Image (cartoon, rainbow, N blue to C red; front, side, top):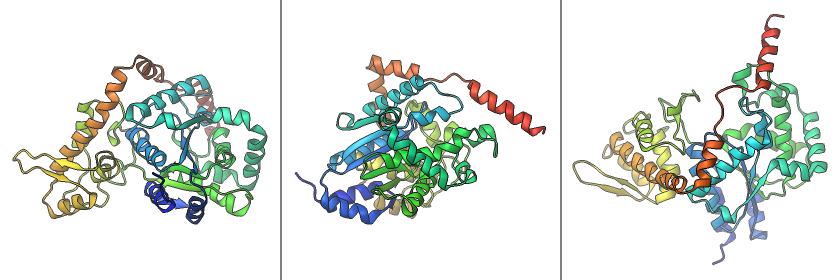
Length: 365
């Protein structure tokens, strides 16, 4: 059954919490039945539930809506990672582990075209590098440094040069692909706005619509808690049932308050899209099935549903999802090998050691 353009628009907008060039998306979908939608992904050696399950939900929605979906594995950029370095073979292994995780989660991988950025750079170097250089000429070093995601190991003002050129290269990577629509996580918003500035002021080519999907909140304490080193802040794809239960038990879930409640956000973003409902099982009986997020919020705000009920229901739902993932890896020898191969040694690379030594020397000047 053919999907109407307004239905396809509704699907894509439901994915993007924010949409850049939304008017262009409306016109595009009226003219083109099968828009090309690119999904940006940097390979991750420790894959969390947002990267695994949330990404699967969004990609499957796009495929079902009739979009031509391509995932761009940004392997080339992962060479900036302080614990990985420039070994592209290692990075490919990590990316293959991520793809296996998507298969385990039920992503329609056989209907998705997976591309590697390192290959794209080799095949389209004549288009890519002049564009990257043009972006680099338009903006200051200070602005480029502000986009760094690996600031802590080095300290402000002492970044490797790779962190300075990375935003220019990412903007070029976005514009070089023949994409109608891009999907990014909202935590990449600053670089996306750099791309928008460049498009609006300078770029003469087609401007793709950019969707920014929501980021799952930190489970711990409150919305301002930002310690990314604490494993309790999120749920990982390989977490065991006891790990999930402990993290959700410790999660911030203020009674009768729905706003900035991470447990409710997890239910909204993961449980309802996955199951279409939330089942609350109570010890005293009187179990209840919620068929919508709106119904759940009314029950929670009224006190009919307390935080213990919410946490127990969330635990069961997440464990049921991750059990499918675990079963896939337990029954697949090749997938098991990828889990072992993607593990990083707990040491910094020689490149990072050199940078840190240079920083120490600068500190004494």
